[in-house]
Image 1 (cartoon, rainbow, N blue to C red):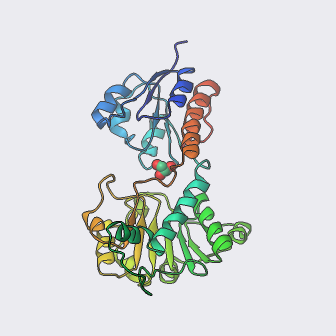
Image 2 (cartoon, protein in one colour):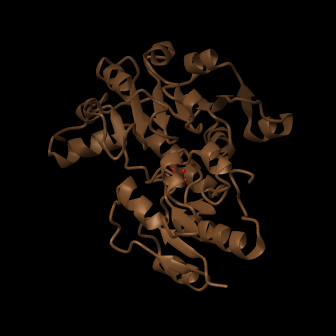
Image 3 (cartoon, rainbow, N blue to C red):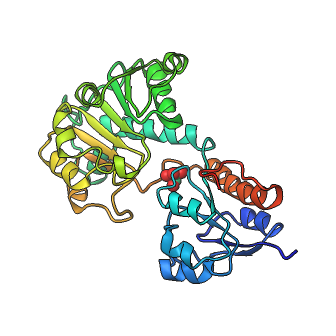
Length: 323
Ligand code: DGY
């Protein structure tokens, strides 16, 4: 039997490419060229599987010209770059990388919350610009973190990690909203209370978004939702761009309708809405919530494990769909 042919769509750890090469005939992308969808389609035409990172869409058009494709392993827990329905209809297995990034991403969510509430990047820019000439009682005075109300929209594994950090580490009162309520045991462990979305918006001092991006969650936070938040509140997005209406958020930050925002993800990233670049009260990071060396390596290895298990044992470890 010839070895299955695998396409790795972005530059990844050389040791993971080496591992894959022991099992498959691999075409990799060591120069990290950002292929267009048409260039991707050309390369996919003779491949049995693909290792992706979320940079490319796996949609009907691509599936139609990928006759041999049997599996696409995303090196990400989110898979909004997949048309899962189309993949299932085409008999293509989809996999993601849950669990291995949960705690690292929750750490980052909390770091972004702290940086936003305590105005860390804004004050650093001020210092670097040589503007610091004296101590002042209200210089970069931010919002309190300990003892405040932490609101979480989307209470999956990462949301629960953020809840635990807030409740156990910072004595925060944690409220959450989710499609479904957690079990009483998990609520007790996270010290989190379920509330409706309107109450979440109205009560949170810090609102963290950790929900998946779907047609239903598109612009879940827009002008109307921001208007319901406290004027002293912060908004943190570590989920996906598109969940927040960035244009509405930029306007709200400019008019100080909320105090500040911390954003790791953006609509149409790597482009960032120009209005967000103009206001000082926002901390902006380039989609790095899961970016520690150990976690990114664990994600890459899990995506590779999925390909190996699928071709050698008939079932991947962390499937997204059933085919
Ligand atoms: C994920 O795993 O979904 C992260 O956002 C990295 O893309």
